[in-house]
Length: 180
Image (cartoon, rainbow, N blue to C red):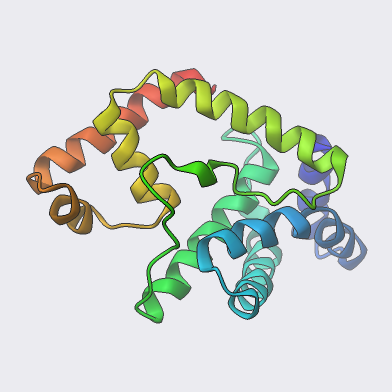
C-alpha cells in the first residue's frame, strides 16, 4: 500500500487527476480520522481534509521518498492543516488525559488493509516513545499530537521554556534513529 501512495503522489506531481482521485479514495479515511481526532468536530474535519488534499495536490512534487513514507508525509500535511485551523479558531486539540489513550489516532472504522499499515507504524512509534524519558515523551506528545506550543507547555508543565525546548529537541533526536 505504501508504495502505491508514493506512486500516486508522483503522478499527482505530474497533474494526473485520476491518480489524485485514487489517492483521495485510498488515503482520505485515515486522514479524516486524524483530522477528526484533533478537531473533534466532523464539519471542521471535513473542511480540513479538503484543505489538506488541496495542499497535497499542489505540493505533491515536494514529497521525497528518501525522507519518509508517503502516508506519513500526507498525515503531516493534514495534521499541520488541522493545527492551523485550531489556532485560527483559537481552539485547542482535544485532550483526553495524560495517558494519551488516543495515540491510535485512526478510528476503528478504517478498512482492515489500511488499518494494518497504520497499526504497524503506530506500534513502532509506541516502542520508540517508550525509550524516551517520561518528560520528553510527554512534551513530544503534547506538542505534536495535541498541538501545544512550546510556550504553552512551559506554562502547563510549570517548567522553563528552555527546558521544554531541550526535552523536545533531545527526544526527537532520540526518536529519529529508532524510527528509521
